[in-house]
Length: 175
Image 1 (cartoon, rainbow, N blue to C red):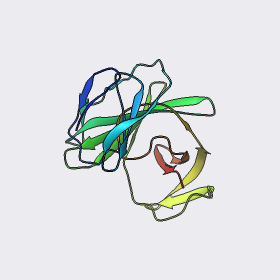
Image 2: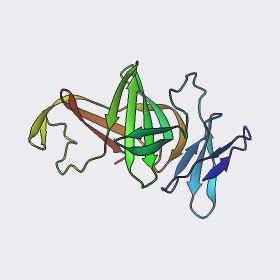
Image 3: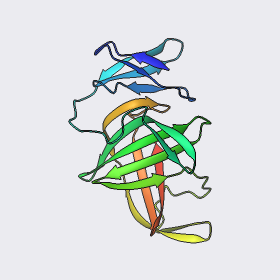
């Protein structure tokens, strides 16, 4: 997909396999929304945010012999704590998520999980391992760059369970 921002006139091109719902220009603070039948249209101007990314949109990395590219970057904040989330996609449509906060990195893989955690139980079990609830909250979006297949302005809920060094992280968008 190729998008030329009408604000800064910079072009962003990535080969992606998903349908883009939102595009946040990595060169300025303009955000575009996919309006069915009309394509990406200007949605809003985000607040300027001074930060430097570790990885730019389009950066590639290899994990377990699979090459991924960064398709989106989100900066979120909850209870005064800020972190950066990187969404990576492989050429086969497999996803990997990196989360960085104050120099500490977490690699997250998407899994199927049948149990409900919306009521924040104190423990959950996955693959014969019991995880303790560590945290839950409702982070806010601080900044975004790249291509997204979801509404980046949805209300987020995050619920984290740990059994060090393992972690289960649940993220719920909207309802």
